[in-house]
Length: 439
Length: 149
Image 1: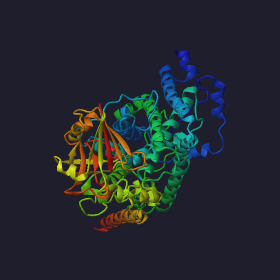
Image 2 (image 1 turned 90 degrees about the horizontal axis):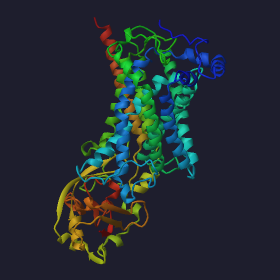
Image 3 (image 1 turned 45 degrees about the vertical axis):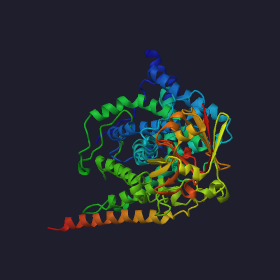
């Protein structure tokens, strides 16, 4: 039975040698018991490296899609949260309108993958958890610093996952601004991840190049030879599950979460998101698709949206006022477009209305640089949104009046709402009162 | 170089890399220090580690140890994994969808959408029950297959 002997006391110690040797010699009560308690024979470099490789391939996608979602909000237009990010400022660009499903894809991936990877992260942490109780905790300054960076790595992934999961389930227990915390948490995690990968990649590669254990059944599952990181148990017990069994278990957990989450983003599977708030339609009618914010929540009254409602268009000194009948009399365009929320859910609907570029032309600007859209809503973070030129002139960019062949319902923004390809849902302003074209 | 390595315990690039990592974190800490909610953020960051390493892990490891003691021996196919796997599945769902299952976001959801929140606890129990039932059926099938000549 392989057993990794503790490093001999006379091994060359880092400076100051007396400190590290003394630390190793003074074992607090309990650490020997903890050392003997690790029994699983499947812990070792191979299992940790397989789980690490999966995370190495997938976590960057979660990080990058998160960053893209910040860019989709429009940092150039002062609309990305947090607004002022100092030098941690990724290169920004005007968010494109094509493909129309771009934001649905990036945000859907960010949220869905973030959820699906939870069991992989938990499995990875399980595979290395004995290291936490190791004595001595460090044998050199290098190890002290590395362990501190691991606190940032583990804290980072757990913090990001917890805040993200709470946010999509409307639970703002944490009492701090979600955008700020999730943004800076992402940078702390990313810096720690890059560091960890740079240090550990050679270990991962050599473990995966070595003998494989993917085909070993439980009956023949034996511990790996002792490793320099001390992942292999010194006193392993009998195997109750093979390594491939552990991987299948982690993968099964990921599949289970995927099955209960994708319904948020796929209309046909909506009801399969059994445990998420967005796994439902409001009703079976043409306007029964999910509502982010109801007309009541927005404080918009029937008087405001009734026959007295007017749309005001401004460009320079020119002002045009239109009622809904005038808008319906203009050239109508129909587009099948997804609308996607930053919380990860999305839906595709058939929208009909006036092209924004036609409204810009009516106001007297053919190619505006921006359009500031104001809602009837008085309060709320998204009562106003700025679109860049490309988002105004896209042929499918609409001031929608109807959806799926009927008038918009009050909750979906009656009398008129913005729908632009690939635009984050919160910028598809509802109950539009005014559009100011600039440039 | 060898002298540095001996004193520090690793190559110089190791120190550089970690210095970069701590510089990012330090800069963020300074930047957020002025926020009224900075203390809460730190609490949640460290609390998440403590909750996983010193609460969640010891709890599930102890439960598993008890399970192994209760089911680990005996002839025939072991029931251990037939309990472990659905239990882990149910636990995973509870962990990920906990806010919904406990109804913690119901007020915010109702205020935003005007819809009555659905009771997720019953759904979670139903899914968990289905996982245990499927596992038990499989176990029964394995035992029968073992007994059949």
